[in-house]
Image 1 (cartoon, one colour):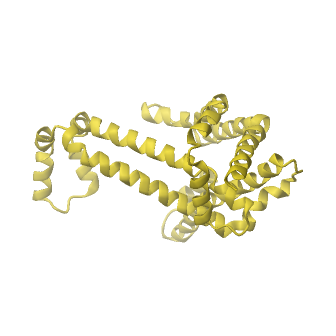
Image 2 (image 1 turned 180 degrees about the vertical axis):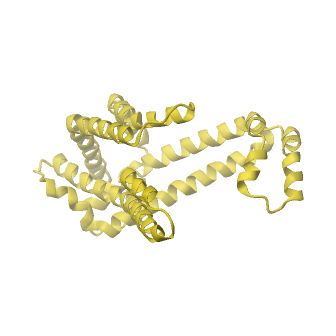
Length: 277
């Protein structure tokens, strides 16, 4: 869709084409926004299906739309999850920033930034592009790589831990029609207390599955390699072809083992739910 819409935008020129161009750009933005918010709702339908598998029930393709029956609750859970992740990352960044004085050579950093400060004093309204051009990126990276590494590692650990504590929220939401997003998160936190490492071991037992997912999911990034190396870029048709191939490979992987993996975690939810009753 993006390739088609971008081609339509490129074909509209002049004042007469401004309205058409705005229409196509709005269509592209709305489509991307719809995908962002509808994908989690579709995933809730998958949760409902694998819960049925775990309980020995038959499932039909229409059951994959179960997430839309709890649309606003699912959307609320998605937004709440994003806020929790952002809050966790902000805490990690705050800690990393507080440690910057101990991990970075501040005197050297002052010397590096002195020309930039003088340029800003001379022109307080300097454009962002101009500021980006005068920043000594290599010197800054050499001075700040350790604090940046600490912030990245802290964020990764905090987000990973939080993701496991939230692991069962979607199951509780779909398994209990009267449960809201906040209640689902609370139940997930309660059930996962003391069971995080058990779920980590369960994930590690499917390391090959996640490796294939990462491999097929990142294949589309090969279109960025020529751009980064300054080589001729892949054509739009080639990029679409690569996207179809990677999507096909992911679908084949899901068809082969997806139901088994997802039902395994549904059974784990059933086990923890029984223990916490």
